Amino acid sequence: MLSEPRAGRLAAWGNALIAHMVSPDDAVVAIVGEDAVHRVEGLPGESAPVGLTLALGRLRALGANGLRVALPAPGHPLGLSGPPDFNARALEAEEAVICEGAALGLVPEVYEAGPEGDVHVEVVWHCLPVREAPPADVPSLGEAERELAEALRDATEVLTRLDVAGSGPVAEAAIEAYRARAEQGREVLAPGYPPRAVRVLELAQRVGALVTLASENGHGGAVSASEIAARGEALRPVERVARRAQVAAYNSVVAERGMR
Image 1 (cartoon, helix red, strand yellow):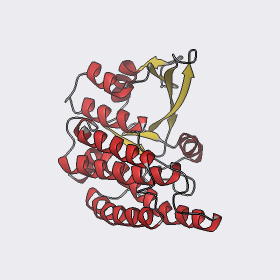
Image 2 (cartoon, rainbow, N blue to C red):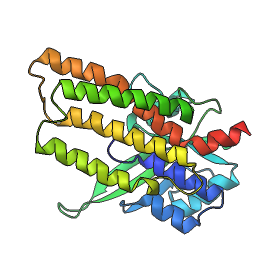
Image 3 (tube, one colour):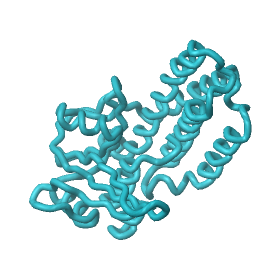
């Protein structure tokens, strides 16, 4: 969770476009980011993949009035509402976007092309039917913020006990990389999102960074298989809270609109 999900960028900037707060060109540039190109396949009325500008305009014409994020994991269909075929594709990709008002969803498929040292990334978003129903297990921003505060304490306690947070230069570099990203956190969400959503997303990314650090930075002080398993068991609910909070932040403008 050190990197921003592509579904998050698409939903955030797509919502800003729907609200007429950014131009189509600016939205597409922000969504594509460092990737080479994004296309949408399976869009109703189109027989071939189309570019993001055309796709976003067509989705609005089809009735899309907001974009929601799903970040599912095995046993946790976070943000999904069915049907099973779409849920399975989203679970495989670990992310998806659901179009409110259009009964359509988008699941990314990522391709890498080019020679070593000059690899570029292309993304195809598969457009599929979805069930119009409340998304699974998405908290409010207030709930997410409270859960995150507790999760951050839990994650820090676990890492300290297992001697991961202070386990050398790799850990320090990872934490510094997170801090550098946090300084730019207000660029993560598009115009139109409330400050609280930015705050929740930044904290969710910090918690996710700590979980990733624990998973990728060797075994730290855990010297036995049972201790390694215990670390994973302790951090699993923390990672779940961080994903829930990310979804709450990205979906906040759509959720607030539905409450009016």
